[in-house]
Amino acid sequence: SATLTLIPATLIPGDGIGPEITAATVEVLAALGAPFQWETQVAGLAGVTACGDPLPPACIESIRKNKLALKGPLETPSGGGYRSSNVRLREEFKLYANLRPAKTIVPGGRFDNIDLVMVRENNEGLYMGYEHYIPIDGDPHAVGMSTGINTRQGCRRIVRFAFDYAVKQGRKKVTVVHKANIMKALTGIFLETAREIYAAEYKDKIIMDEIIVDACAMKLVMNPWQFDVLVTTNLFGDILSDQMAGLVGGLGMTPGANIGEDAAIFEAVHGSAPDIAGKGIANPTALLMAAGMMLDYVKRKDLGDRLRQAIDDVLNKDQVRTGDLGGSATTDQYAKALVAKIRG
Ligand code: NAD
Image: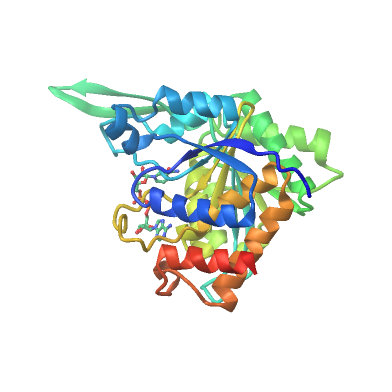
């Protein structure tokens, strides 16, 4: 029998529905024999509650050591309060590529046979939080300002990542999404860099096309099948990837991988879903699919494929589904169905 070498990985259950979907995911991964040795850490609101810090040093150190993490959603207060722990993690570990596949698992929705991948730049753009207010006439917040920054180096890195990924996955086309007509500097250098890298390194390997972000949003709804892999700057990627999640049955279905030089962190695209937290009804599929990407990443695509097949079978053949998919299964019933399917 093969000796199983365990891979240490940080597990952050997160906030809201996070602990529920993480427990379900860990249970399914155990049934699968996934080779992860979990080190549980807190962050987000759970971090504030446990030790007064939304990103405790112990959590950062654990990820630094393991270079690998599975993370539940972390709550970020809007407006005031603390800065997003998600954004801080992306900065801390230079997780420059946010890979978000949107693939139809459950057919019969508004759109069928969707198979798209968003490659979102994750460290630059309008997400950097270089923000300030200008006071006028006694109103301290009379003007709000945000500075977006894209670097040539950052553009090269993400564009190469997208082209490499697309070529390796046998994809046909990479669409560069921009707003270079208006934000000529910020997204102009992104488009320019994509054209240069494509011409120099990829023109014989794959097709590239270009689209302005607003037209892209419209076309994603009119005819999403015309797209394949999309690559864009941080904020556009944030918005369009949620739109793409909508094409495949909502946020409960779409995983995301944050990949960088110093670590890789896998998560669901959705947030902590405070409206359904604690009820045991959340859909853990997105986090399970993220765990599938994590298995692929550690070169256990065999296990990733088995996991994806079990999800497909349980949702479609057995029709065990959570409420967001029109079913009545609880998170736990769905997880148990997956475990039974995997154990055969
Ligand atoms: P959300 O994704 O948490 O919820 C949006 C809607 O989708 C809600 O109706 C929710 O019930 C539903 N939903 C989301 N995931 C679901 C699932 N797995 N199963 C069933 N239904 C699901 O978005 P929000 O309400 O805008 O954000 C809530 C919090 O999450 C905020 O504090 C936000 O900052 C945070 N957030 C975190 C991440 C992350 O950790 N990566 C991502 C997005 C939002």
